Image 1 (cartoon, rainbow, N blue to C red):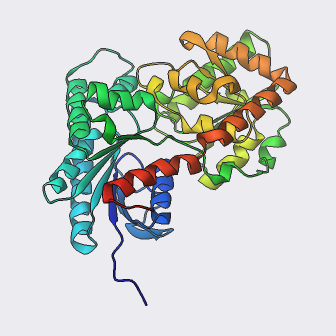
Image 2 (image 1 turned 90 degrees about the vertical axis):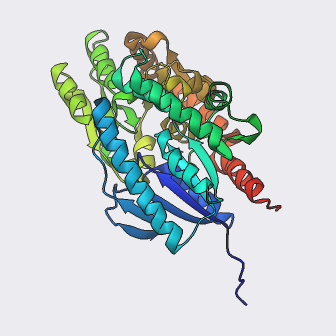
Length: 402
């Protein structure tokens, strides 16, 4: 006989990426559905242009992707449009399916206003902090001086943290911001770290197309935005050619984003386009085979107030596939990778290139660092380990005892 008890219903709001393109959100939704929760996601279009569909059991409603804006007026237009679309979508879901919790993925923190509205109607609010919006804004401007927009973003950050029934951070750095800077109650804060999913934990066959190129492969996988520092990969390639006289390698850059065109232009400007291969965006299921083909992985995100708070999922995916990594010395990079990576200090591209050379010339070092990397992942950093904390948050919110 079919049970008449309705599952607890969660509405997820996602502004800065689509579903299931955002891997963290996809993993969270899958984990909660496996625990018996009913999931609906509202997000912009991405790889899928369908307005409405079921994705592995999750209802997904999409609105047209907004343009990426710059400057005060641009931010107002972009986020004004997105918040309007998210709110109208939430009203539709409220009427048609209903929900008990509004789970806000940020940035932007101002999406919390929608959840606060539904709190007035008796719904709960979960605030899921992916990135620090004020610091992300400064990183995109490449300017550390706070201005009016920064102060507005800080206001919405505090509002979100103080209004939420439960809060999620990806690491201790972000949790400390929620508690110390924004005044959230520590007992309401949970750490749910990023973690590679099962596609990266099994034996993966390397991409034959990349292996057939017959060179040492340096690899980057991820978003290509201004704040991601992928231009540093191009500058490292230039350093390897000019300072070290090397051309026995190929730098493979996998991904897409607003900074991709300027990145290609930089490769031409520095006369290293023959040593760089841009794949563009590829299906997520193809990412593991690309990483498996790399000899050395690169995390070029510069150390700054934004990146120092970020646990980069790409680094963890590199580690899961037993790859050594070279990165800059951000706080969370060091906590995540430990001895599985080399760290260039003070965003020094020359030191970064020196570490790459060291790994290029020492296959046994690459192998030993790769084994350290996988061991760290297996000992607590997989998504399976992290999903337990997410389900515990929701079980506590609903008073469920398993």
